[in-house]
Image (cartoon, rainbow over all chains, first blue to last red; front, side, top):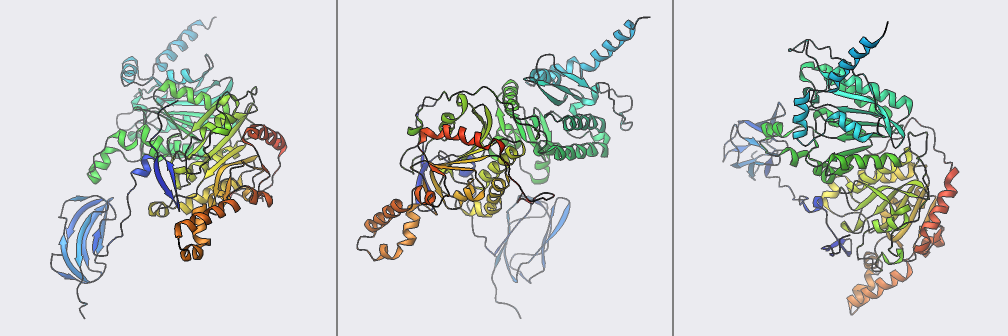
Length: 112
Length: 514
């Protein structure tokens, strides 16, 4: 029987705070961040096979941005909406983990 | 004519095959800190009780240099024996024979002993120590795995199935243990993953050790794949023996009753729970105060520690305990806790083990991660498991029973047979602070001293609702009892429920929110 008093912390469940211990899994949980529409992230880990756009270029919605090969499948990543390519953070041949910020976008006036 | 010559030949033949991969390979196995498969079986079973089947089975592969290759028992030892006198079927993969790799004949030996267990209605224990599919056999190995999974599923809920991971268990091989009722792992020895570190590094460039990816501790604490965690093989075997002694042979039987014993815990049950609902305590102390000989075999001790599950005995009969644990995460329900409890309740129900629920919970864990991880879907598993169960179901509300958690923790509304509450129980739709803030919002906001008014209203709510008597007045609780009466009333309830008969509508099977 441990005689030492465990290091209880304050833990809020609704309006009341309880004294308790935290589990390792709870402490290691990832905080949620609101995803920005201007960030093109990898949804699956893989390798960049080809990049079709350049920084500064204005690209139309639906146009291909790059090919991300993952699980023996070549995924064509498309432009989510018409915008300018602000920054490309990946190169052909690099392996990217999941949720890597691959391309940053910048809003432009809609071209008619 | 004497058979002497043939007998000697048989003995010689047996002696060779029983050596598995040979002395050198066994030495290597021992040097890795592992026991040989045969020794593992002998250590687990009662002395001289093991009877081996299919010792002379040989593989039939002719490709990739396999022709003429002799593999003792095709890398797996199968047979029957007894544990504490109870018959069981057992198999152990032999890592010293071609890395314990699984070929078709190896798999067929396993499925044969599983079929035997299912027909004879005895528990089946599998010891896994295998490099995986025998690549040379290709589709034969895959067929073998599939045939094992099918039998695991057929036997589920009919006979207790136990998996012991004593070596690598990777790729498709992990799914047999995942389908069984209890998985045992040992520190530094057990490794389980679908894709190993080398594949992960090649594909993703992420470097991780086998231990960090799928070692014993990871599965015992993070993934919940393992139910029991031990520091050595011998400790693991003791855990298995303890578990098996608490279980029935099959779903047609009851677990063996033993001589009833009084709890030996010296703690006064009235003093374990702090009166202040915000203060923690170890709910296992309550279990020790209730169970025979204060014995409790905890399942999933490290994973989702905010709920405690496990087996003990009351009045000599095996009982499944489910208890909120205020010591961890204030005893909230979350995805993992719901998953953990729901599967345990279903196991108890399948094997005629009454369920005792000890409730002290503040609600569900708030957070984006929980909502996005599907706490609705996971939480629903618990409602399903309790509602579905027809074994005797007893609930004791120790302290807090708020909101959805009150319903989920085997409430009367889900079919509890006996509902008791301690006098300090707070049964309410939510905690007093939250409730007062909503109900008396206007009064609090309009008051000169908001905090004082809030305190007053919180107290008003506590006096009016945060007690067991409102629920008792409606008959949702059968009795408000003194803590010291709990064990006696539980014994009474279990006696009353001996012939419980509960009907469910005929169906092929339900569709629980897996």
